[in-house]
Image 1 (cartoon, protein in one colour):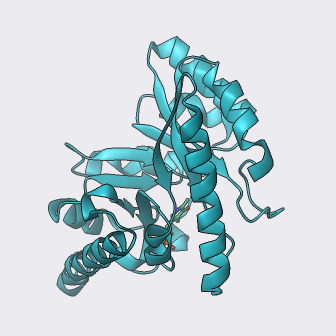
Image 2 (cartoon, rainbow, N blue to C red):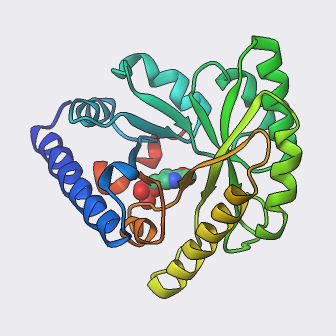
Length: 241
Ligand SMILES: *Cc1c(COP(=O)(O)O)cnc(C)c1O
């Protein structure tokens, strides 16, 4: 059932987040257009996602392959860019390869190699981001900061996998100083790789910042924030397959 007040909340949330992104971009010496606003749609109601799209959201992020395939026909995705942002098992790559515009969560050589194989098979290229485990957490996927350059170079040699930048999920902490330190470290890595101008490695996108830390991320140089619960409210985990 559509709930009118939930729809209005989505409108208000998007408006407020846009303003905050614009202000944070200014504080970092940039323009609001320099930061893309992704709505993270996992486990959210389709009608709310469609409202966000009607409000001008043109980039969505999905975590789970099956969930996305099951619901995509109910979403008004004309002109909307779709990125996979969740950990991708290699056996799911073939299901998603022609369905999304970017895979932000390349977190192992195995998944990069499988993306290459599936691209070959379908005669397509795939834009990707390299996921960095910036907090060095055991529980998290992503490359260790010390190995990112080497792995990016290896991935760039595959051919059809097109590196467009870096993505990270920082540790869950309320310590804003620590978050800033980690975001700045990401920014430095991003610029270092950018400056090397290597073949088949573009550093256009620095994807960092979620509902609780997007203003800090933008202030530290993020070019894309991925925001779920601050747009749509809490996720309904009972919907997870
Ligand atoms: C779920 C998710 C988000 C959004 O998280 P919120 O805290 O709801 O904004 C962003 N990025 C990734 C990779 C996610 O899995």
